[in-house]
Amino acid sequence: MKFLGFLFVFFVMPPLGYLVSATVYTHLGDQVEGRDTRTAPLVAVATSCTAQEPITLTGGFKTWYVCQAEVSANSGPPRTMEARGFLNPSLIGVPVEVGTTHKGTRLVAEHPRRPNLAGLALAGTVIGWVLLIATMLWALSRKRMPKLSSSPQDIAEHAGKQFPDP
Image (cartoon, rainbow, N blue to C red):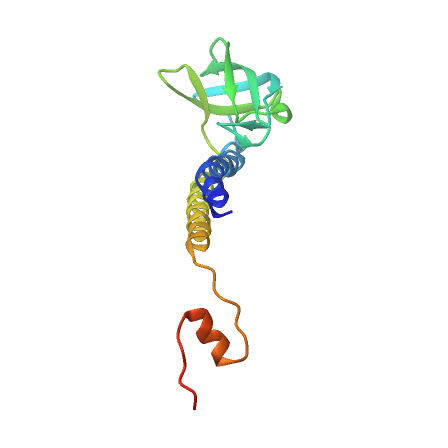
């Protein structure tokens, strides 16, 4: 039975912990804050969104969206780009300030709603998960304690010792 416990701790808990951490991070980190976009250098307006699977390596246990967005720089001509994660169907038609990464090929939220909370929650989740795994390993590695009875002779027999008779 301990062998199955160790298999569970080593092969099930780490992937499950990763998915829980990804869920926490994407839930708190992929929310954009509505701001005035008149002075924004890069603005995206979502035109359509497609829901992705609820269990993924990038999103954890959360449905996330891939949206097609019309992106314009300083009120210039718009171009269509794909936004992953931070736009959702409720933001279709709403201008959102965005930035780019990977030499301008990937859109990211310029002003996430709670940028510090996402990192802190992720750190807390990872630390908590590591402590949970350590506790499970400690519990699995302990030897079973004998059942305690009321007489000292029964306890001594379990321990392999003899108490002298008074």
